Image (cartoon, rainbow, N blue to C red):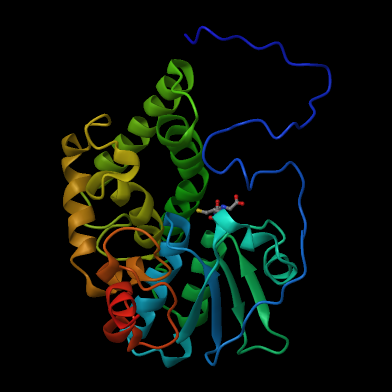
Amino acid sequence: MSDTTYTPPKVWTWDAQDGGAFTNINKPTAGAQFERDLPVGKHPLQLYSLGTPNGVKVTILLEELLALGHSGAEYDAWLIKIGDGDQFGSGFVSANPNSKIPALMDHSTTPPTRVFESGAILLYLAEKFGEFLPKDPALKPECLSWLFWQMGSAPYVGGGFGHFYAYAAEKQMYPIDRFTMETKRQLDVLDQRLADNRYIVGDEYTIADMAIFPWYGGLAIFNQYEAEEFLDVQSYTNLQRWAKDLYSRETVKRGRMVNRVRGEPNEQLRERHDASDFENKTQDKVEAAE
Ligand SMILES: N[C@@H](CCC(=O)N[C@@H](CS)C(=O)NCC(=O)O)C(=O)O
């Protein structure tokens, strides 16, 4: 147990207390904080995002759709710097009243369609292009179940485990223990599921894999939160096999590069406006040209 105790007041008030990383952008209120229109590029789909796990789900799907030849899936991916508060600009808030990346505007409809929440974006695009969502009535509910499992479960990993293990100003045993137990339980759920299934739904690669990979593949093979040893991620052997299998796909590698602002410069494509940007505009090349 932590040696600090807290008696909550009758009514909570905000005093911008230090909550570690992200304190500067966290506020207890919603809505636009300043006027700023969103840029609009030349493609039907305009994505406003950042290369975090929730952002990467969508760019993996878009790269998969393009690889299948769906030219209507061409997209501009604009960088939203959440650490700078870009998500509180009036244009972004019109696209997503929840002020979180990713947000999508589909300009192929009149008026343009807004979609927010990464799971809703995956479902919208899968239905729009008729891909990566099983048509078999027995498999479609399985895919949706895992998609919504991911949406409901990952906040315990990111907002719970990741926050208290990696970002909080002080390490406290109680929350770290609580969220580590839940994170490991979820890793075991996936490991057991993947023992007898190549992909999450079975033989078919779907949006459920694309939703789950950036979070749990991140823990398994990318040392997310620098927690690979602490979580003993190597022990989840089926999850390891699945994560490496997914990351062998060029489309997944590309999706992970888009709107990425950390890591190796040659793996960062901060904004994507054309397929050729992967060859010409990665951060190593941008920096070399400066
Ligand atoms: N449930 C949302 C979560 C999105 C989310 O938490 N986005 C984070 C980055 S991964 C964000 O934009 N945070 C900015 C903020 O909280 O102000 C989704 O899946 O789209």
